[in-house]
Image (cartoon, rainbow, N blue to C red; front, side, top):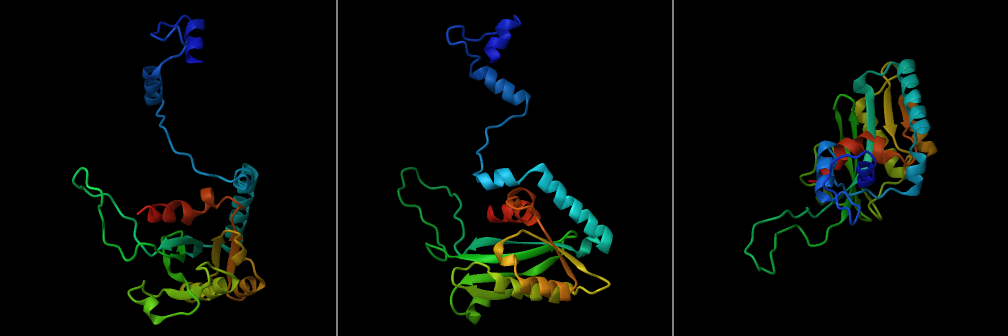
Length: 237
């Protein structure tokens, strides 16, 4: 296209007339002038691509504005919650080693790690609620709490994932730390994961002055604050 444009408008150039191509030098210059870079694409499912649209995002922010106006939530009372997986074996970095060395090892807590689910919540002013850590175990052990975050809640599930009952436990933990009241309610923003949807969770929130607002479906990869601003850099460590 660049070659055709230059020929049509008689723009002086050094393009290849045989291949009718602009060439790599022109492409590099074009990308530099327009601040373009080669990026690795992220896998996005069809559901996410279709569901995450302007109308859905508009509805969410309209509901958010209506709730803030109705309950007059201060920023310190607006919380976001999300889950992430943490491996029990740290990611190995790069080291300098002799060229040709076939085996370069590094000491870790194990060769194969298990994924532990961390449930974290943060307010708009940066206040963190101690996390809930869910281990892939049938029975709980006090040893799992050794050297853990202060005030954290520890639970176990068969696969290490959160479920409806564990989310209710987390809501009680959340209410205990944030102290919502009728005069000082809390807004809790979360995604519509199946574990968040239960009568027990709704009744607990209602009785504890917690107002829940769901993010647009299939859009957490773009609009979930914890996923975008906190978990991204954290999981990249």
